[in-house]
Image (tube, rainbow, N blue to C red):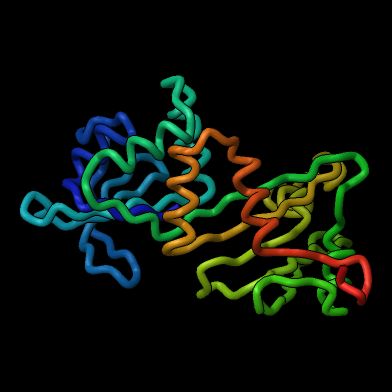
Length: 231
């Protein structure tokens, strides 16, 4: 997740994360494509800004997947939801821009709703539609298994879908056996610019679950067909 807010970083840190500035560490550092010269860190949470931010109210929050997990723990400790976090983010200052937002749906059914291999096969046969987006396949080996990721769209586009076996990824990260994680397939949507802002506002203000909001995006942006008739 990446959020740019035109506000002083200490206000963002205190009001959005509920953290005191004195509990953060200030370091020199740059964020690619932006002119920031320093950042505050609280664990894995990074807030990029300027040394003279008092005169240039502008900062950018960068959260990796692990940082989002850390933030989720913070929110739960304060009995807050992601919806409330997004609402606060939009309310801190007049200008807020979500530069990137990743969302995911997990299929942990014992009998999977889909398999990555089946969807890759459909992509190769052109049995899919995604508003003109091309597909690509990445592979990574773990022990005797090869994990494959089906990408629909490019990293530079406003929307990209990733479909992969999350159990293989977790086994590779932890060194455990794949069977320890059971059946676990994942669909991720990586949103940038306007689609990211639109989804963030939907999460903040619509009376709908995050799961259903993600489903709505997928229904609009990605389809797989049973046969060449594409009906």
